[in-house]
Amino acid sequence: MSDLHWMTVAEAARAIAARELSPVELMNALLERISRLDPKLNVFIRLDGAAAMEAARAAEAEIVSGRRREPLHGVPVGIKDIIDVAGLPTTCHSKILIDNIASADAVCVSRLRAAGAIVLGKLSTHEFAIGGPSFDLPWAPARNPWNPDHHPGGSSSGSGSGLAAGLFPMALGSDTGGSVRNPASACGIVGLKPTYGLVSRRGVFPLSFTLDHVGPMTRTVGDNVLLLDVVAGHDPLDPGSVAAPSGHYASGLDCGVRGLRIGFVRHFHEEDMPANAEVMAALEHVARTLQTLGAEIRDVRLPTLGEFAAVNRVILQSEAWAIHGQWLRERPGEYGQLARRRLMAGAFMSAGDYVQAGRRRLEMISAVEGALRDVDILLCASAMDPPSRIDSPEEVERTYPRQARTPFNVTGHPAVAMMSGLSSGGLPLSVQFVGRNFAEATLFQAAREWERAAGTDNMHPPVL
Amino acid sequence: MDKVIIELLARRAGLDKALAEFPEDVTAAAEQASGSVAKMKAPSDPRAEPWPPMRVGTGL
Image 1 (cartoon, rainbow over the protein chains, first blue to last red):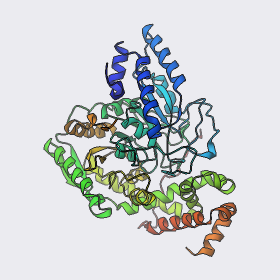
Image 2 (image 1 turned 180 degrees about the vertical axis):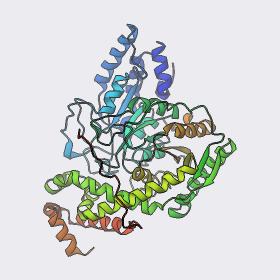
Image 3 (image 1 turned 90 degrees about the horizontal axis):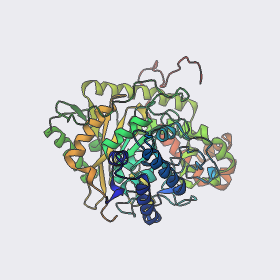
Image 4 (image 1 turned 120 degrees about the horizontal axis):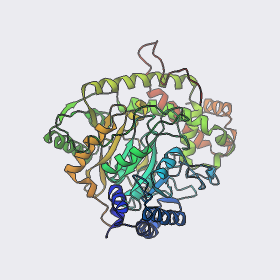
């Protein structure tokens, strides 16, 4: 079997279950690739290769003896390093937590293990999921496998980079202002921010309690469905968790988009933050393609991106200050400069500002709900620019806020980002689909149809 | 935001050490905050409630 590193989760799980592929063989191939590419990409903060290989051998023995775990038996997964894995440090890519050993798995990790997945290690992130890309931390920032001179997006940088580089077939990220969907956009993979409360956050270091989401990251839409199916579900010990029915996310995968009503939020990228010309053209191409395949496309207006971003920042930085205030008072020098600046901002916001943001938030939720009464899903930009160079703080600073992801952290609606095409410079461009609460299946339906039409699931970085 | 006000607010928040060691970062943080707050529109209805709302519960 060749190119094991490009196998999808579904292909690997099926081949392992059919005993056509040994989990040990797959793990060996990935570890070899990691040893070759990770020095250039900085995907891992902590590679747990020996334990992963031991787990692969145990999985093989279980399968041979007829003891099967479904649906991910023997399939490796990477975990963003703000998510606890028992016995490993959860550093949040920060000196502050460099010795913070997790005593138990986060709920999402224990669900993955119960489904048979094997944890490969902990992945690079922006510091505390907010400060990056930074060069003043104990670990270098991850780089984009499409061109290592470019930023892979963040904050789930290692998750996006490692998937696009073929270092593992699935990963977990977290998303407070777009941190799953940004690396998905920059690295040309599939990243879902599920409906708020669908995936437990217990065991995940918080950035902002009312905006944080854990999300599946994969190379294909079908794999994202598989991963969401495993990690979704009510957790009574997570105060934000919702006892909503989960599952059946694959129900629309092969249904196409005929008759689907799609609201195109053009003002995000045409008026609010005029996008790069190639990004705009790719978005129009996605809309036209889906229309040709039978979807009904109509224009939709929401509050402006500037308003959404301001509300997101006031809530995020107020809640983050509550978490980091003590460390910032006592150990400010142990943060990188970007995280220090962003996390201290909450000290300069008032309680009134925070409540006002919550009141505006409810109006924004109503606006998105209103739009989704008339259409089944929304189509909009994710990033307004191709990934910037990583070594240019000015370019990162200019492009990083130019995005349309934060609105759906504010409102909690599910949103998936994926590749819309490639720029003339060979870097991924992106599109975002947004759905009704707990209607991830409809999102996957549209995303899969675009993936099938464009062949984005077979597009990999050329030099790797 | 005025430099004196930034310093007062920073000290009130207990950021004396950051003020001494990273004064430019403190100023940048204060400017970020005031920029975000300034861009936020007030709700149009004075009775508008914040989200998420208080809900009765049993605790964890």
